[in-house]
Length: 219
Ligand SMILES: *Cc1c(COP(=O)(O)O)cnc(C)c1O
Figure 1 (cartoon, rainbow, N blue to C red):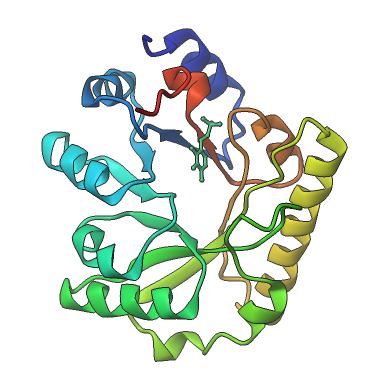
Figure 2 (figure 1 turned 120 degrees about the vertical axis):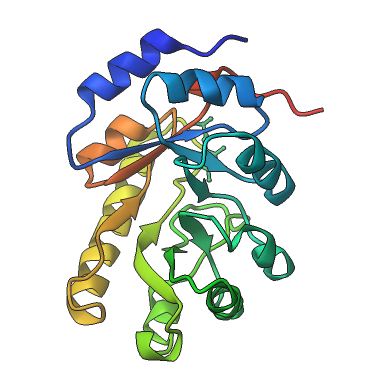
């Protein structure tokens, strides 16, 4: 399946300046990434550590690589040297490990806390209460929490999805005011099927895969 260049251009054209497009390239060959890169795309998202490090080694060093999948603590070390933003931080122990590996690489790694907003209980993430219990930023000097990430329920009920995005935005504002001294900049929400709705509800970063690269085939 070829890269959908027409869709790419129309998404880019309609995207508000405040919203960053992360092109989700998981399972897709590096040639597809290169094709979007040649059109000017620099932010790419991957879900699997091995796949990400293979692609990172073969493609341009000025790509901003986003890790958007469920990250296991024992694999943080492989992506710590180069990862641009880790979206799915869903536990304190993972945050601690990112801090440790970032330190070893003399880096400060930007992270998003994943918040549980969907109805399904299979989706990972913190509750608001759990985030409030996290230690103060000074204790983890090599991680920089820059925002939140969430995934809406897998449903065609757009009212439900809208409600979940609105809840995440509200959580974002609340945390930003009460805990983070308004230092949070990034609200990662919205995928191929719901990104327009997410932007209406205040998203600053959308993660779009299949609309750009075609449906994924898992083998
Ligand atoms: C795969 C994935 C996406 C992209 O999904 P599409 O529906 O193909 O746009 C976005 N976010 C996360 C966390 C993903 O795993």
